[in-house]
Image (cartoon, rainbow, N blue to C red):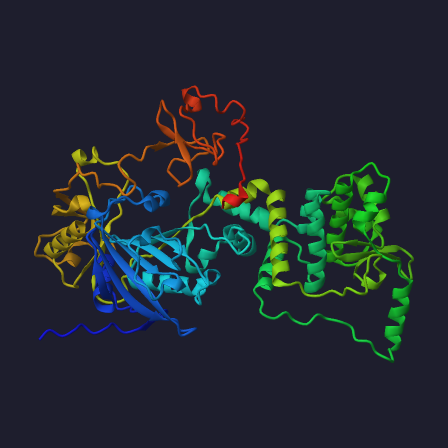
Length: 635
C-alpha cells in the first residue's frame, strides 16, 4: 500500500532550512523535494510547489510558491531582466525558478496561471539555475499586508544565502505613499538606497552614469545647507513654503537641522514615530526667583523681532532680496558655529563666503532683532567695553510681530509631515536639478555572494568553459560566468572532469551534449587526486570540450540580436531605458538623449548625428548640455 507523503514542516521566515552545501542548481532541487509539496504540473513545462512559513513577529502563516519553469518549453525563453542587469551575455539557463508570496487577498487561493504578469505579489523573485537571479517586486504594509517590507527582504535574503545564490539584481523603482522615489529620499537621508541594508551595491547607472558620479551627486545634494537652498530658490512660492517648514521643525526639534540630509532624516523619522514626545514648555511659577525676574525684565526691553525676509523686502538697497537673505544666512551660520562675535569678527567670517564687503556691511547694519533660520539675531553692546556684539537667541514668540497666542506650537500630523517631505523633496530637486537627476537615473543594484568554502571539508571550484578559437567566432567574446562544482576531499581529476561536464549539461541549453575533455590549471592523470595537481579549493578552473550547440537560438539571455549601443551619454550597454536605433548604422541611442519625449512615438525614420541626422541641431553636445527631461511623475 502506497503511503501519502507527509506534509513539510512549517518553518519560521528567519529560520528557513540552511543545510544546503552544494551548488545552487542542486540546492534548489533539494529545497523543493524536501521542504515543499508539489501542487501541479502544467503542459507548458511549469511545475508549481508550495510551502508555508510562519512570521515570527505576527504569527501569521504565509504561503510561499516556487514555480519551476523549463526554458525550452517557455514562450519567453530569454530574460529581459538579465539584459538590463548587464548579464545579457550569459548563456540561457535550462531552468528558472519563480519564488512568490502572493498578495494578502490571494493567500487562500491557488496561484493563477498568468502569475508572471501579476503586479500584486508581496514578493516575486526569479532565480536561474546557474545561481544568478533578480528581485522583481516587493510590497509591504502599504499593500494591506501584515508583513513589512523589512520582513520580506529578511526572508528573501536568508533564502538566497541558504541556497548559495551567486548574484541577485534589483531595479529600484520603489516609491513611498506620496509617490516619491525612495532611491532619492533614502540616498539623501542615509547616503545609500533602501536595499543597501541587505548588501545590495551599485551595479550600473543609466545614461552612462558611473559609480563615482553617483556618489558625488549624493554628497553634493545631501550636504547642501537648507539656508543656501532657500537663497537659491529666491522669492518663489516653494521657497516661502520651505522657509515656514524650516522655522517650525527647527523649533520642534530643538536642533539646527542645517543640511538637507539632517532635515530629510528628521522628517522621515518623525513620520514613522508612533508617539510624539511632549513639547518642552516653561511652567508658570507664582513666585519667580530673582534671576527669572531679571530675565523677564531683559526680555521685556528687547525689541520685537521681524523675519529678515520682510526687513530685506522693505529696505532700499542696490542688492536683490535673494543676496541679502544669503548674506544673513551666512552670518547666522557663523554665529551658530562660534557663538557671540563682534562686528569685525562677523565681517571676517562672512568674507570667507562673500566677496562683496559693501553687501556684508549693509546686512550687518540691518540684521539686528531679526529672525534668520528660525533664530533671532541679537545686536547688543558689551556691558563693560560697550562694543557691539552679535549673538543668536531662541525666538521668543511673545516678541514676534506675527505671534498668535490662540495657536500654540503643536506636533504636525502624519499627513502634514508627508506634505512637508514632499515640499522638501521638490525644493531639493529644483535647487540641485542635475544632481537629483543623476541619483534618480541610478536604479540598478546587485548583491554578490562569494563562494563559501569554509563550512565543511569538501572541495569547491568554479569551472569555466574555455571555447576553442573556431568556437569564439560564433560567440561575442565576453567572458562567461563559471559553474560551481562540489567534490569530495579525495576526488580525482576524473571526478572533477565528470562533475564539471554534468554541471555544464544540467545548466545551459546549448551545452546539453557537452563533452568535457581536459582541464586547464590543474595537472595530473585522471586517477590522481585533484589536490595534488596544484589546485586549491575555491579556485577557478578552465574546462575544454566539445559538443556545444553554437547554432542554437537559445544562446544568450539577452537574445542573439541585442544590437550595438553607442549613445552620446556614454552608454555602451542596454540599461533598460527607452531607446531608438539609427536606420543607417543600426546603433541604439536613448530617446531622452536625442530629445524625444517618452510620451511621443519614435519617428518612422531616425538618423543619428554620425549618419547626418538633424535631431541634435538644437543641442550643444560639446559643452555637455544635454536635453534633459525630468519627468518626476514617471518614476
